[in-house]
Amino acid sequence: MERHIDEELQELKEKLLMMASLTEKNISLSIQCFKEHKEEIVQDVYKKEETINFLDIEIDQICMKLLALHQPMAVDLRYIASSLKISSELERIADQAVNIIDRSLVFINSHPQKPLIDISRMASLAQSMLKDSIESFIKKDVDLAQNVCRRDDEVDEMNDQIFRVLLTCMMQEPTSIKRAVDLMLIGRHLERIADHSTNISEEVIYYVKGKSIKHHCAD
Image (tube, rainbow, N blue to C red; front, side, top):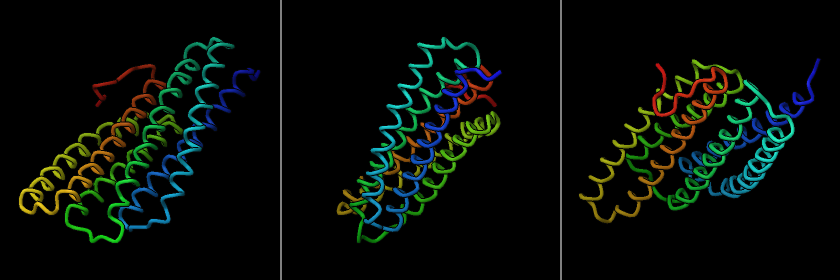
């Protein structure tokens, strides 16, 4: 027999997946703007950001309603709790897309330099982590979620390397300081995307296995 709560849980899932899809798209667009200097992308990102924020509020309301009216237990309760946290992580990831767009505007009509190559690699890795964290949620794939967690250290190492290279550039060529600082900040935004994607993966593991691995990702 189908429970009444199942219909509302399905609505929650659809809203969450819509939010995830828009967030993933905004990250892709923001990185495209940075790499290709496409200013026409900017307004599209801002518009999607508004929809993402609205979905975040809707998901909060659905979760609160489910908790208040149905008093769910076990896996249903874990799903609702994880959905609340995942929507919050997605909203923060979407904020990073806007931050990248804002910084990318500085580089419109400018010429790329060597650190841009490393940032592009870091961007690809952060994108793949976000994509896989969402897929792990859809498929309830704990192995994939754990794999996302492991990749976080790689992003951190890349960001540290980029920071060191840019710091050297600033010391050798003071006129590059403004551009180098903006590149550092973009690297930081990408690192935060990886961090939030890791948090989503941790919530997936909690939802599926009922086990919290925060601060110490399982092998």
